[in-house]
Amino acid sequence: MNLVELGAFLKSRRDRIRPPDVGLPEGPRRRVPGLRRDEVARLAGASVDYYTELERGSGAQPSEQMVAAFARALRLTWDERDHLYHLAGRPVPPAGGPASHVHPGMLDLLDRLAGTPAQVITDLHVTLVQNPLAVALLGAAPEPSEPQASFVYRWFADPAARSLYPDEDHAHQSRTFVADLRAAVARRGGRDEEAARLVAELRNRSPEFVALWDRHEVAVRRNDRKRIVHAELGVVEVNCLNLVSEDGRQRLLWFTPAIGTGAAEQLELLSVLGTQGLVDRRT
Image 1 (cartoon, helix red, strand yellow):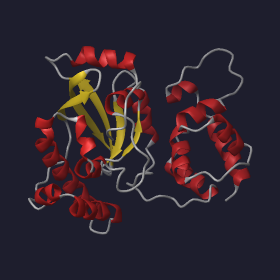
Image 2: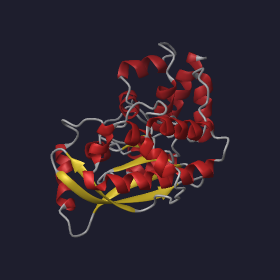
Image 3: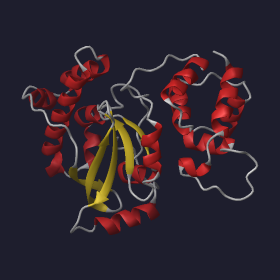
Image 4: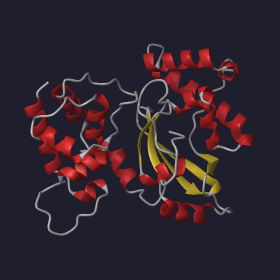
């Protein structure tokens, strides 16, 4: 671990980014060429004091989750992300896991979808990053620890996760999740430990999952129509659209109002309600 070099590298990456590049207003009288420290801290979900100490080459060693958050906030390339992990003395996470690096181009698209709920997930349904409207609609993603980070795991292992959808939609969602997961597991190959652990945990926890898994149905989840239960807005009917990365391991999801429903007005109200009173529900 080299905290001095880590701090210098963080500052150099911060200096090259303009606020509009990451969806922030530029504002008047800026005294720095790129982002301010408080802006990086906010984007990464860290305290300003903590980030300031890191840039100064002091403070505590950042966790793997914190390194991943800084890499995303600073729009690092794959090589820069790996370099940041090395400087922080943390192992580079495998591709496709809960700490996966989101491609800067996908993050840029996410920033440009400020007016609609959107998020990036892995092919195992682990949420990597959300915009504020996605948090307001779906709830904040949990900490990225296996296997609970996967919404498919929570769907079958935690009854509370099912509150996201109306009861009458649960059977369809279960079948769709399992068919999509089977496609992802096969695409990753038989030696992928993360996928194998997830399937093993689900087989141990859920007879429903076992029954569906043993049917060998395969269907990649692309575009879908969903009914989402929201505490204040009621049932919101949306189209869920996908943009898939080249290797198939990440998806940018965004939600648009279903035609012929009141979802457009509900999503407008969602931007006013924000995240007040929401609980964690989904990735």
